[in-house]
Length: 172
Image (cartoon, helix red, strand yellow):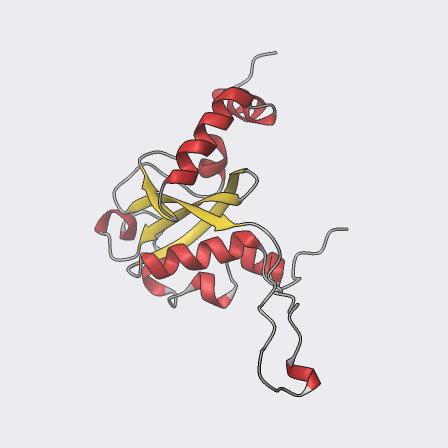
């Protein structure tokens, strides 16, 4: 039985080459927190989530620090309710990455995101962003909703990661 290219791309990502992955992580660690990339690393995943190689759509890689979200303990007096250092954040790392990308690129709207790697210190996500005022996207049926919808999908929790962190995706 023959398969398409995306089948083989996704199969290759199930067991990535450790040496290539290690080199990539070393390079990414040294880079900035949010970097615009020319092409998505996982093309089949990006296409599945709404990416198209056309004007008005970009992909950025976001680097997030791993670990707990522990706050420093207050040094001055507080009532016991306010002394807690382990506040649990309801959002997942992917949602945080989407929000940071949306803050950096204010004229763009977050379409979706996906995980690309992690090392001992960082998580790495690629976020797909679309320019809502781009004429190419206004004429495309797949993206025409962007010009009509309200801004800030990442902040309102209506992206895929946001819906998941709000507990609206039930697994049956």
